[in-house]
Image (cartoon, rainbow, N blue to C red; front, side, top):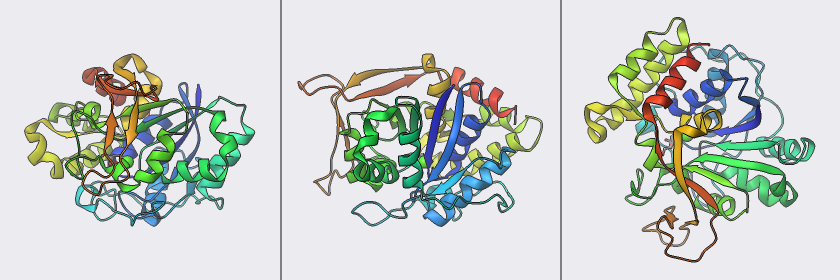
Length: 311
Ligand code: BDR
Ligand code: CA
């Protein structure tokens, strides 16, 4: 089992990623969930993270609140995708499990200092503000990180929030720049791969048909999510971005990509937050990321459905 910290801004697709992780104790041990402002403000993302832990029947999971705004820019949210609460779709009760007192950034720093070096993987599913803040405040922890597997960026698929930028990177490009230059080995799930993880009607029906409440809630989440994306993806279904990160930790054989150099645009307003990925190796810049380009979508949904069925 890999020890992981999930850094997240739930978000329906974040929620499904958290459920997949909590359903997979033989593969991943969730040391904590750190919430960040992104899809919706922090007070909602930390609450949503706890709602999801309770939905999974794992109220003992530790949830921490982190940064409530990007390092240098104003917060941009995405209620138009995720709804007012960030988790619109299913009707779920308010959480009763506690929010931890410790700040998420302090939890990340402390965990990387106390766990054996090279045994903790960070899984960012939102803007990279918490991770970058931890690296800036405690540079000694950087070399202790086993790997960062994150959802963000795009290359051939270019952008979803501006013509050239993906949401997570766009919201905090300065933080993304710090993480991409940190020297930690990165595995990146860009839109190029997540736009192949489409929740088609049969796949959504498979979630809905699962016994118990969780499959039904997942189907309601992906239904809601789809409302926004339908004009873009037609009848195929909406992309399920964030669970690809957790699926990679369980079944990396479902994914293929290239080890390449990736830099973040932080200067130009026009292309702010673009992930400049040297996919064709036209520079001599050293590779810093495994940039995933393809996945076995049926294998991915099969894994997801089987694991959600356990909850
Ligand atoms: C990313 O942005 C968010 O809206 C999703 O949760 C995902 O992490 C996709 O661009
Ligand atoms: Ca997210």
